[in-house]
Length: 210
Image (cartoon, rainbow, N blue to C red; front, side, top):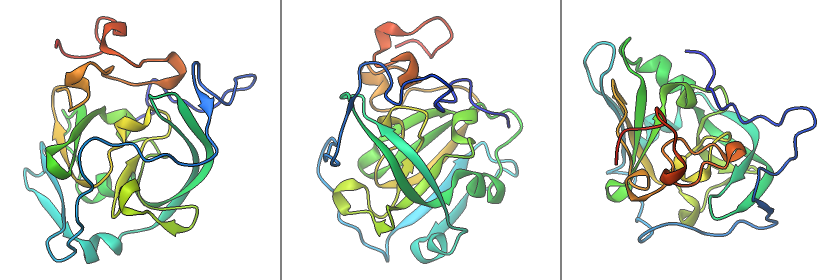
């Protein structure tokens, strides 16, 4: 599926911090709305939309926890201008989900759905990056509820809002559609190295009209 256009890895000579970011030693809690209560017996992860076979795929919490586990050392860049460098994230690679529930050939984007109907859209190439991960752990420890337990998406080369907390599924799309924050003035792509924070910075082709 190729690599995303904004790969976001630190190139030779490039600063560790993207433009406008500051180094954060701890991990602030930032989210919109309340922290959802985790009920394992009701939890389900769904893949739906334009799947290759037209069928929806679901895993309960026990089944999802048994999927192949991997880890990646990656930074987290919040649009509120703090960055955490070199965290070890553990969980299920997005590539595993793509392999088990392939998208149709004409899929271009993914909508990531989380608790309370929260959503974030991604280009398929960003989602398919080898470093994109459905994280359950950080630095060897289970995520706390405030930081997204039982599951959050980590997309290291994009701003952190593109990786929602409390993820419950993904929707394959054949055309782009803005997610929660993208409808409310955030940039449709969210590359921190290009400082793509807000929708007024978008160029033609960056996203659907507001």
